Structures are given as structure tokens and as C-alpha cells.
Length: 529
Image (cartoon, rainbow, N blue to C red; front, side, top):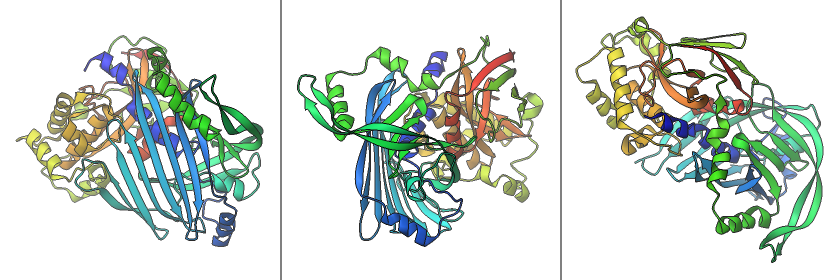
């Protein structure tokens, strides 16, 4: 794979996350509440009575230029409350404009309890469908699928008490108690795109007045819609607390979003429908975005981090860097090949002795399987127990049984067999096997499924990789031999070189934590060889 591709490719994970999270965690997102646990049913029911049906619309902007449209609709019925969120934008990625959209429908009871949800994510590469329902307060019955699957990946996911989806407007910030600067919130949420539960911690940091466009009129001379009437609205700024992810933006007294900021330099601003949607259509019909603008606002380039040094070559054996500007609590920076102390990160590439396995595939050790149950398990979109995955892995393995040899064989096969191409979708091992293309996420997803299918404990690492003077967001597998060994089927490295900076271990539910590094993290390389 050429350096040019690597630099162009950047991190599709961040691009996809920006598209999804703008719809899910952005101006249309987050149900906030004051307590860690659910309020009393009567209090929720009282709050629900204060919810007014209606619709709000948003301009989606990047670099001062409109790139899309978003909306939120609340409908109250005799049976419950429906919340529908929609987002569509032409995202500049790797020098081209990529259309992405997301739509969610959340059905609540009259007491604001989650009942059912559906989400659709559309892209030029592959759409995704997800849906589910609650089963009491202890589990969510959940299914996720892509068009090429013969049947959806489904499972019952245990949750700790009642949860809320992060697609809900921050109603309780306004309806629970009068918003006040300094007030804090803890949100038990379940994100269906990452299939994970988390506690989202937020606080109110400021209060201000906004002048919003209430209605618009068409200006024939300009050929577009312009403001007709405005309204002054008081709003409160809600931000995630330190070392936590979540909504960042302004919310009014009715719990409606006024403005929010998103990864990749994307902003959502509440606006009259005609200006938010019709003007976007008019602008698209007039002209396509120039190549210069696409490069300037490219999400991948916006998320790149300067290295602070010319590293000189690839295949580094050691790298030392100073990390600053971001709250790094909760990241997996220390352990294995990495040592993190007092803001200094030292990465040391594994040597030959580290690659000698301390275990055998022939031992059939129950304790070993129990210890690495999570790293051997099949998961939705990572189908290590699928016969197609298993047959391919066995074919690649041949007569070899040494875990190191098998891990390296799989690494070589994935690197040689997949076309290096940005794929704007959620990575799915079976889809990758069928299409034989993708960026680092697809390479990592397929490799992990193949390795687990033949009994090699494998986990997904996500962080940064240095390419041509910048660190780009990247994903790669780690396999257990004598310890965890980083490898890279995208770059064709076994083991991966020391320019890989691991921040997160785990699937999508953890990978989204990388978003809070954007625009904050600074890296200064002090030594590399």
C-alpha cells in the first residue's frame, strides 16, 4: 500500500462517526436527566405532560458553508410519544463529497419510558439498519443488519436498569427543573450503533440569548429564502464533563436544541425550514463544491494531528512523544508495548522473543478459553462463528498450528487480498469478505473474525498512526501470543511498528471516545528510531 493512499485514507472511522454522531449525539441528541437512576414514574409522567408536539429544523454547516439539513419532530399520541430525528449532509472526505444520512424513530410511553427504536444510516457504500425493544429494565432485544446479510445480527443485550437512547432531544434539561449554570446531569444511555451502555455526564456551563429565524420569505432577486421574522430565545450551554463524551451545544427552555458543535468542524444551527432545507437544495443545484473547498474542509485532514517532528522513516522500533491539550483519563495508553507516565508516551515495537507463544492451540485448555472468552467470541458484525469465515481461516492456516505462524499468515492474506479503499459504512466482517475492499476498519474487522474463528484471542485497538508528518486516526488488531502483540493488516506489518499510538481497546462503543481528542490533542515527538 502506498504512502499516498495512507495519507488520503486517513480515518474513515472519524468520518463515519461524525455522520452518525451528528445525528445521534449532536443537535438532535441526548436525553439528559439529573440523577444516575431513573426518576420516579410519577415525575416522568408529569414531565411528559409538558412536552409539546412540533418540529425544529437545522442548518448543517462546515467552515461557514452549508453542507446539509437536519430536523427533529415530536409527536404526542394517546399511546405515547414518538421522536423522529433526521440528518443528511454532503461530507467532504478524502477530497470528495460523500452523501450520508441518518434517521431514527424512538417510541416512548406516556411516562417517557423507552419502548422501541429504529435507526437507518445511509451512505454511498453500504446502508445499515438497526432496531430493538426493551424487555423490562434488564435487557434490550436488538438487531442490526446490512442489505447483503441473509439475516440480521441479533442478540439480547443486558443493561443496568432503565436506559435512554442518545437520539432524544434534551427534554429533561428543561422540563425536569429550570436550567441553571453549574447544574450537572448523569445519563444512562444505550447507543444502538455501538451496542453499548454508558453513563453520559453533562453540566450547564453558560446562559445566553439567541436571535432565531422563525419564518422566511423568498427573495426573487437573490433566488433564495431569507429571514422574515425572528424571535429572541434564552438558552443554556450543555457540555460533557471532563473525560466524558456527549452533547455540546445550547438548549432552550422547551428542551429544543438551538445550536451544537460536532467533530470535523460541523455545526448545527436552528433555522426556519425554508432556509435550512430549501436553500441547501438551491445551492446544490447551482454548483458543486469546489475542489479547493473540499480539500480545505476535508474531515480527515481536519482530524489529523501534526507530529511536531519529521520521523524520517516507517517501521520504527521505538517512539517517544509528549501528549498535551486533551484530558487523557480513561484511555488505554499504558500497558503492553506502551508506557505512559507524566504525559510522556513511549511505544516499543515487539521483538522476536515477544512473538513466541506461551500457549498451544492443541492444548484445548478450558481456563485459557475462559480467560479470553471476550477475545474469542463472535459478535454482531464480527461473525467469527460463521462457516464462511471459519472455512477461509482454516484454508489459510493449512497444516500449521503455531499461533504466531497462523496470526502472521492471516495478516498477510488480509493485507494482500483487500483493496485499499475508503468505505463509508459500519465495518461488517462478512461484507468485507464479499467485497474484498476497505480501509483500516474493514481490514481489522475481517482479520479479527478470522483469527478468533480458529482460536487465536484477538482484540481491536484504535488510535493514531503516523504518516508523512501527521498522525491519522487508525485501527489495527492485537493478538495474544506471549502477551498482546500489535499487528497491522492494512499496512502489512507483523508486528506493527512503533508509530502506532493505541488509545482505545474495544469495539465501536469505545472507539467513539476518540472523538473528544479532535481539536484538543497535541503531539510532540521527542525521539524516534
